[in-house]
Image 1 (tube, helix red, strand yellow):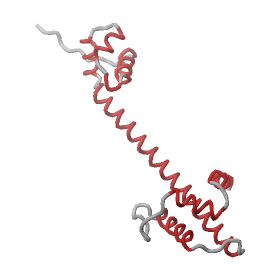
Image 2 (image 1 turned 135 degrees about the horizontal axis):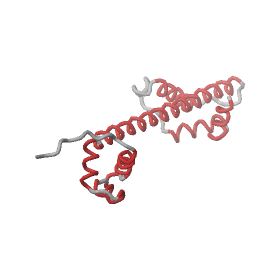
Image 3 (image 1 turned 90 degrees about the horizontal axis):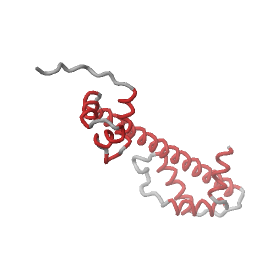
Image 4 (image 1 turned 180 degrees about the vertical axis):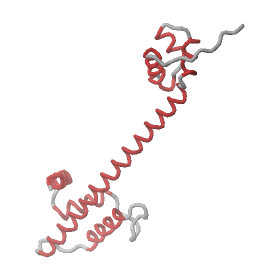
Length: 160
């Protein structure tokens, strides 16, 4: 006669075993958990099955992936917003310098800044004016226009 199956209740040592299993990375195995906890492999397999370790691990990995994607998106949006502020500040500074007759208007630099402004305003469409100059080109033009380095500019932005 076979023993009736009893429903296991997850206890502290089961949670500890799961955390050990999850922390092993791609080389995880029930055998390693059993060895570390000095229990039989059959017990660990039973716990894994009874408490849905593989499913829980998948859910945890999906949640981690979601969090990483959210962080990457937030970082990207933050960078984009900061770059947009720099460009707007450069355009304003250039306009003021031109009005005060301190800078000769160079159409190429103004054109680059206008294109960058457009691109930053419409990042998914690539901007209405087409190609955007490289970051190095923008920073170079910006430095020439503003006579300041990027760290100084960022410091001013953060202070504002």
